[in-house]
Length: 257
Image 1 (cartoon, rainbow, N blue to C red):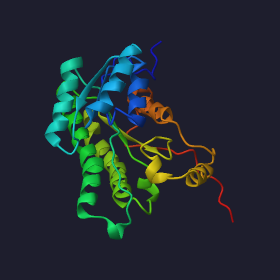
Image 2: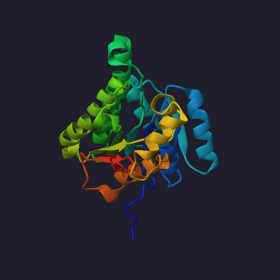
Image 3: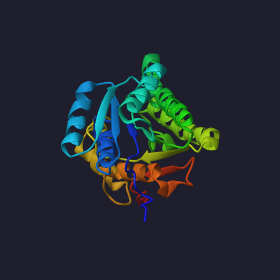
């Protein structure tokens, strides 16, 4: 019997795929038989991840991309098709943040974060959708947001606002592209223990412990615990799930009076 949770042979792009959550997503897909293309601005982040996946027996290519450039996103999709013949899944995992009070935030700081997080997600998703339609329809788009996009964050305004936009973008794209059989869903991570998040969200052990204690499960999430929901959204097991947002944050802990 066919496994509805399988992603075998599903050609997958993972943006921000060289480090952290993105690298984990790419690894988990490749180990399950999905040919993967990882993309990022920095080749030095992509090459080790590509080599590790290949060494473990997976199929992986890489492509340098600035997601703020619409044409570059189109080229990224074309690169995946050149290597693997088609595209089935794109996971828009790229992201950027600046820790700054709103009153001190520069216009360039605001624009840079919103351009990467929101514009980039739109450009990547649109490039994938165009390819899906050219192939005859179908395909999955998985956008990665953040609980900061749900609850806000006092020191991360452009990040929070742009990630909120990603959640609404997901719903709107799903409504528009469902007629083509394209499913668009969103994973919303809470505190995940990655090197990139540490200096901004938990800059010292005391804050880190407080963040962990705020979760019902009393711990941080692991990178693979974001990869697993992506596997679900990419597979036929979620064939009737469209426009959904799944919060993966360890649950809200009890409030102390």
